[in-house]
Length: 247
Image 1: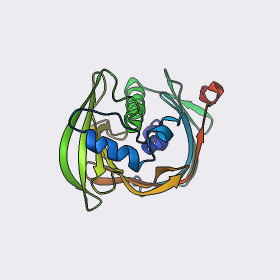
Image 2 (image 1 turned 30 degrees about the vertical axis):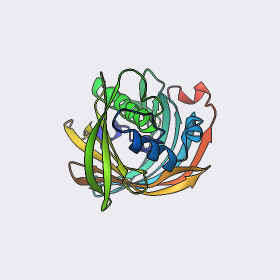
Image 3 (image 1 turned 90 degrees about the vertical axis):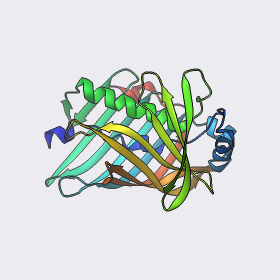
Image 4 (image 1 turned 120 degrees about the vertical axis):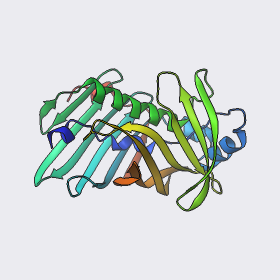
């Protein structure tokens, strides 16, 4: 249980939007994705987002959770997750202020190892990739992954690479253009070992003219790890820096 509490859930970061930037060989997929998710102009306006989610972790016999999260793009977030673990009510607050990671469980500060901090930063980088606004900038490399099946439908994949970050693979529904799956290498909190993580978007909802993930399934090494449902979404122009202070 202690090791579980030391690991932030960062469930908000699976909810990245999907603005796209053109790349040679993937232009048609990119343009279709832009339109599908609400258009370039709308997507670029998103500077910050607050979400509420509920779901279940497939750990310790099943852990129900709710969370409230705030993301200030490109590199700040806060999440307050409430869970019942082995009959005990636990509130875990995770904050990343763009430089340091802080975790607090039931009012007590939790030590953050270098491995945990780096993994949180990788999740934030993934969320930034999922937004796609800056993928036309120098340093990003996009490559085709061909066609696969996601949600029993054909999807086309694009790998995003950048020096100093792990690769992130994005798969788009071939018919609708919507982001269907995100895949990456992650570090498992319980074992400390790397796993292949898939974040499959099962259902979308409309919000202010844009498509936003509503139901998600997270698998690790082919096994179900977490299910989430987004119950509320709010777009903000700016979040005060005080929101990201050490809890």
